[in-house]
Length: 527
Image 1 (cartoon, rainbow, N blue to C red):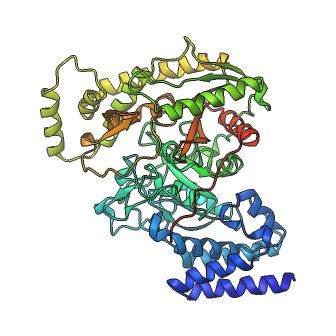
Image 2 (image 1 turned 60 degrees about the vertical axis):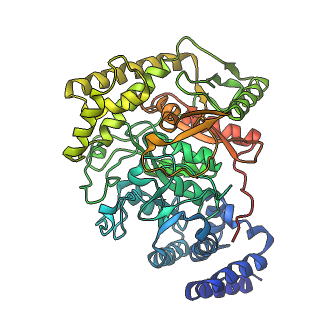
Image 3 (image 1 turned 60 degrees about the horizontal axis):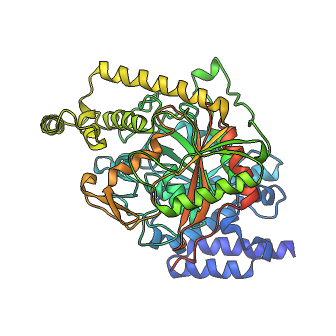
């Protein structure tokens, strides 16, 4: 029976390799129909499940790759998540993985198919960040995180779509077009790692690599009902996660505000990926090694939990607050110590202003003189007492070096405040975002966009606020599914942990997943 099955799968793989269009779809459907019952769920199998099948030689890396390729070609014309495809090189890599597996070699991701966000350099592939200036540029070598994934055996079959310049909570750009949310094709999957989250929710691959400075990992995970981990600042090297035509330098060009991190459909897979990509860069690792602390606790009842469900600068949709409240009640019933407020919480409004100021200054770097002339005119038109987030965004590109240093000192104070808070609490739960997945809004100037929250209209760019809780102090944050809206759209929770204690929010997420459930498949995607 095994020989017949493997002969059948090999024949199907060969058919998929050579066929095109509708024949690929037919091959995919035929394969799914004839697979043994235990293997029909490969679409949504996790890394650990696939690892078990591969190690037991019940499926080959080549078969897993062809399964992923066929599903992408079946569904992605509607979703548009995998925008750079490297299937032929991936086939060669999968064959090499099969040879390694046959000789008994074992690596954490050996033979596992995955994709990475387009903003990461992959040698020989385009890196555009969705910017027209990057259209014809190809990276010479892999980003550090990509190289580590490959060394662990991952079969990288392509790159996923993103927001232009990785600067939006939607994923569309003039190079690759718009990515749709698998839960509702009329809605955004989030951004900037929106293609990554969509690829996971659609069942293409079990693992993704994304990045985050203002929620770019956390927001898409929340909107697509998957998992993501924003690591502690500088835990994962960012060399090779740079704009097109830029040198891949061994430094964090965002002063530690930006991070690279994993996305998956389970906490276990986040942990597996983080173990692979975390650690000092090449020069630094000659001097020290990474040794993340163990989780603070192993049972939900032992956790001290602080729940924050409101922000002073922007409301949170009622369905998100209800979901968070229900989770808090469950935790209290399970024996966890749950608090709804604390005098130790830093000023969230001040943190949001600080984040906005610094990130906007970073993203203005390298802009042409005309841009700064316009900014000076806009600043001159502001009232001196204007303390709105829009005013902070407007002034930010003109920060002097002294003002930047003052902002860095403010970040250091903020880290101290959080350190004190985490003496009394183990994790902080809060929304990843103020809204659930919303309809596409592609007005070119984000200042012209608005967002509806329970019937009220608010500035679109104010949605940044929940990203600003963890980013300025550099804290780790895990996002996981926590429920669904009345319309059946995903709702996530953000779990923030102490600095360099990434394993604590991840362990907490894993316990929640085990106790209350995690990823749920979206409705069948129209073909």
